[in-house]
Length: 159
Image (cartoon, rainbow, N blue to C red; front, side):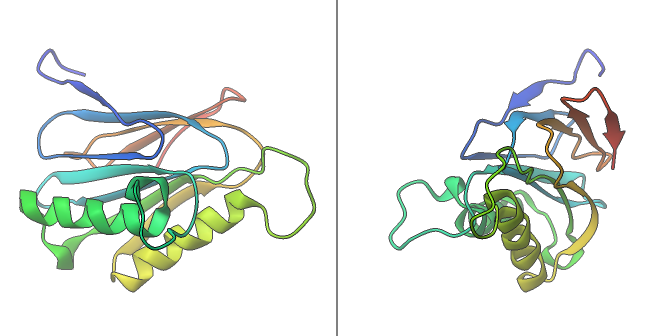
């Protein structure tokens, strides 16, 4: 990071967008999913840290859910000048943190909801690092489109 680069923290059930050299950072991704959407030509992007796949109606905290949080973040990206026809997406998280074999794991459901939200909005999913049983932290540079994933097992990956 340069001296002009700022770090913007994205909490759980939260999203942030940026159109500058800021780095969007979230941590504590277990079964939660990080949805990154960006316009590579404009250098505008956003990061959503969602806990659950689908929002009930009505919803008090849209960013808690993949579907409603994604919709809000996409609108904010358009408001900053991102071209809806030029968006790309990346995903991280969706781990199976507990050994429970009843139904689909929440991490898997979160990833499926994120993939569906991207597809429904015609946003190309260009990279993902999901599943497994390790927690993750994510940092995202809207200007480069790079997503750096730091896994609890010490593996760092850039997608």
